Length: 176
Image (cartoon, rainbow, N blue to C red; front, side):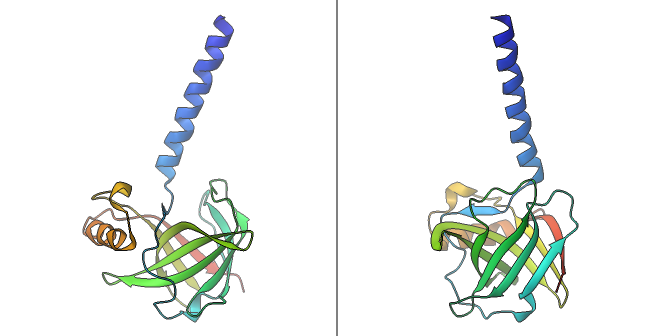
């Protein structure tokens, strides 16, 4: 009985440690709603290509971005996962949107060819051979405040006013 209790305590500690690591390492905002409708902002051709990062333990190590099938969208494929990768798929549809003077990349999961109602959000700075991404913190109402695209926009706009809105900077270099 004592051995079983020790095992349970060890598993509990490991679970808490894993949960703490997820909080410390951060992750992109994941919601049931996109920040903006698909294709409302022009495509930036500088995003097209293969990209990699030297960041320590990124969720994604290498990604390929192509022009999407729908106007002003991208087909995004994760080609090398990092240790913190969580989505069920490596395939996404992406699009840019501007809000509050900042540019964001919205990703929609595509599972077995079918778009899912799972969206991820990154702040992006795009240059010719470098992309810088940031996770966005929802600092006012949090996830509970997001019940539509409009409330998501309101939450992001309010959170932008906080100095620690952008988190987890990752610099991407063009591979080809």
